[in-house]
Length: 100
Image 1 (spheres, rainbow, N blue to C red):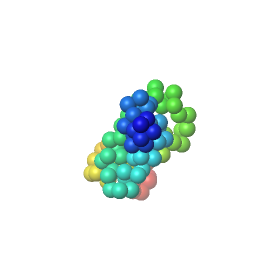
Image 2: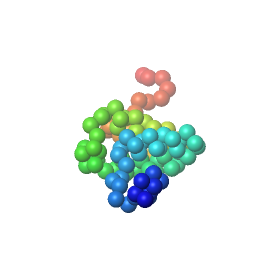
Image 3: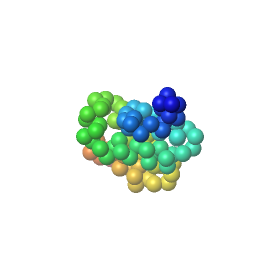
Image 4: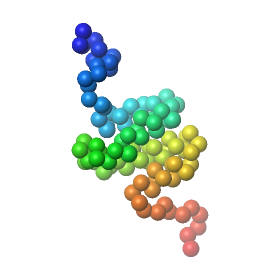
């Protein structure tokens, strides 16, 4: 019985999915045209920095998540949120157009 409920993800005792698993799930949602759901399930990853520090050390993964979220926000028509994701590191975005 336990095997069956674990196979369908219904076991309430299971810990929440890890950062990498959540990101992969979000990528799969995006490939099926559900960018809004991809953003939604990754909200906890980018807002709970203590959990990030406990579970993950990869700065490359953090960058990949933020850049993906920016693309997803653009896909759902929320460019200001996309800009925020692009600036997650606190540095200004490069200006578009000719540089003076």
